[in-house]
Length: 132
Image 1 (tube, helix red, strand yellow):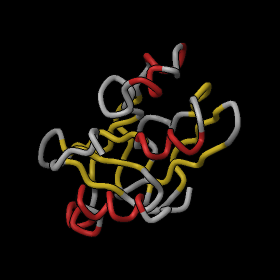
Image 2 (image 1 turned 90 degrees about the vertical axis):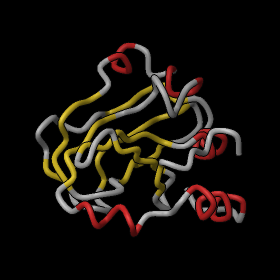
Image 3 (image 1 turned 30 degrees about the vertical axis):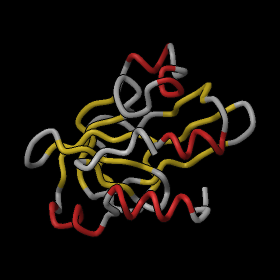
C-alpha cells in the first residue's frame, strides 16, 4: 500500500497515529478504510480536552454509503481537532494521512503505542480483510 508509512502505527479499526513529539500524536483514518466505506461527507469530532481511553469511540465519520465509529488508538486527552474538515470533510478522501488528519491527542500511556500494528502488520491485517 503506497500510503503506509513506517513511523505510523495502526489499530484494528483502521485508525492511524503518527507521533509529532514524545507525547503528542496526530490521528486519522486509513485509506484502506476509505476504500471500504466510500467518500467521507461528514465528521463528528471529539471535544477538545476530552479524555479518552484506548479502544473507546472518539469520533464518527459518515460517507454516502456507511457510518464509521473512529476508535482511539491510545489513551489520552484530545488537544486539537482539524477545523479545516468542519466545512470540507472531503479533504480526508484525497489526503487521509496529511491534510485529512482528524484530531491530535496528548498520550497518557506512551507504552500503548507498542501495542499497535506496524505498517507491515497493518498491511497484512488489511489485506486479509480487516473488519470495518
